[in-house]
Image 1: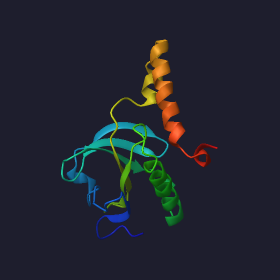
Image 2: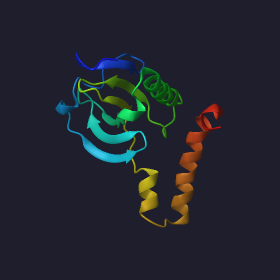
Image 3: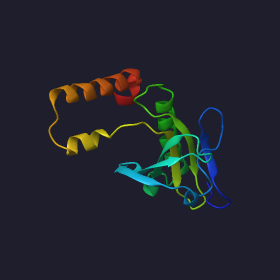
Image 4: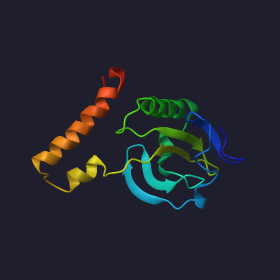
Length: 146
């Protein structure tokens, strides 16, 4: 996949509408957290109609087309699970500067990592978090986490 000529679609969620713009420079990105895939930001979509979570993937994860396809396919599979605990993949695209961006619907709340870093939690809170995790795993195909 080339990096010139603007954003290159990798996949689009359902309706094929562009969610990730040609360049991320036009968006106001609010850093949320980092995880093994890359940096995660909050942003509005191109039309400003919905809250998004943009993951800018680490370049080493998507060097070749095969690695990129595997990453996008995994996220597309997650999007098909239709769970309020799993964000839907709306768009995946290589933007003009060569970075790969996954756009997902932004879920409200705090990442589990932050809860853990905040220290001990009351038992009721731990149970509530575990219920959410179990509900998300319940919709996941066993091949995903087996």
